[in-house]
Amino acid sequence: MPFDNSYGRLDEKFYQRINPTPVKAPRLILVNRELAGKMEFPLPKTDPELAQLFSGNKPPQGSDPLAQVYAGHQFGNFVPRLGDGRAVLLGEFLNSHGQRFDIQLKGAGQTMYSRNGDGRSPLGPVIREYIVSEAMFRLGIPTTRALAMVSSGEDVFREEKLPGAIFTRVASSHLRIGNFEYFAARNDHEGVKTLADYAIDRHYPELKETSNPYTAFLSRVCSVQARLVAKWMRVGFIHGVMNTDNTTISGETIDYGPCAFMDGYDPATVFSSIDHYGRYAYARQPSIAQWNLAGLGGCLLPLIHKDPETARTRAEEIVQGFGAKFRNHYFSEMCNKIGLSPEERSQELLDNFLQIIQESKADFTLSFRMLSKAILGETNPLLELFSDQAKIANWLEKWKEELARQNINTDDASRTMDRNNPAFIPRNHRVEQAITAAVKEDDFEPTKKLIKILHHPYKEQTKYAEYMNPPESTERVYQTFCGT
Image (tube, rainbow, N blue to C red; front, side, top):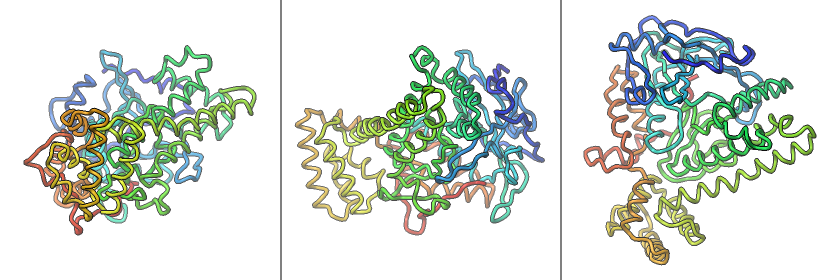
């Protein structure tokens, strides 16, 4: 197969070469044939062969399996060595267009970075990552993707005995801020430089022509992260573990552990069972992204300028610029949700709408989706979501006046809103129902059905209308969990 394992050509201090640990009885659950086709990745013909491949029992020819080393700030606390403790990067697959795809197996066994962990994954987190990462892609949000999931035929032990599984993740790379932090913490400036040069070559080769590629690199990572987090906010996504080891250089979403989508709108919403103080709450995600980027800036200081004070000043200016970049992206994304141009009056209307949603504890996704029906005169589905219908009706009048003032055609506004307000998201209770059916009954039909529905999140799918609805009080999911 056409693998070109460039990361494996770096010095071995950047990784451990290690093969996946074989499993006893792998069984294919799902393979993403559409993604494989885009990658031009040749799939074996039979399910048993696919299971052997995506379990790691028989890695593809040309692959060069390794586990990356990195550090990370986890909930603000620095851990000097993390690394791939339950994941093995098979290598970098190249298609005929020169596109490079990292292929990684999660739950592939212990590595030297496992920190006494078992190196395995329960089935539940594998299903969650497959569903949510593919949903994010369909929602138009930069993300790592799901190529396959396989049950291992072995049990893993967390709070209870659970079936094990292996997830195949595809990414443009697995480079994170934590990779840089690992070497910077050891004062290995040559290691940081090697990583920076490698990241620029792989993701942003045009920056090599700038006067200082390293300041340009920091600025670019700030830009792609600002765009990414703004897109999260548009759909009510809460990452849950925005550690520096989960912040990619490419600007792709990575690690769908305790992630979730808001139901009722509240900026302080937290789902992660390990986020005890709300560090990674919905509304805090932009400031945390900037905090993480400041960590990258600190790693790059020796490359930015030989004078420490000059380097610090330049890095601070770049990182401080994240705020303006994020606000521009966020305002643009959110104005599309209400069909208006990004003007000052639009901001006031947007803020007022969000406030009314919060006061009524209305559903975030449905409120915006029903708004695009209201613009065409169908107001009842929207009004029914709110406890104070007079207040939302008054807002609607002001909104329509602003549409007229901006000379925006209602049909055009409705189309814009439908493209930016999903009808379907991976509701937490639906994901949990799919996981429960798989874990308890070995039934993967709910998983496959949910993935099928989420393939078209912006389309009206009337036969699946119940999947648009928020959970009943008895179905509500208040906490999500890591798989480690």
